[in-house]
Length: 109
Image (cartoon, rainbow, N blue to C red; front, side, top):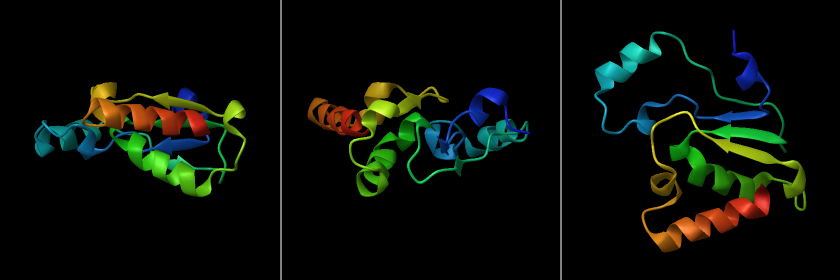
């Protein structure tokens, strides 16, 4: 059964991936996953509420550019959470890349 809070999002993007913990041993992650996880879902082609793991933000932006309706950013929200990856790392390797990623996210959220 999906947790109540997570069920409120139209999209869950990679909420519990191994890739979000690149410095952690795979065996440890698999052990933690054994306790249960929330499955990824996309309930609507043009979501109002999106939850994304930090490492999935740039891929989400690419998907938003290709499939989100134009002019609907005011009705959308994005929550970036779920792992210990820092937001500065998630948005890009350089200050310029982070600024471009944020600028792109502001267009869609």
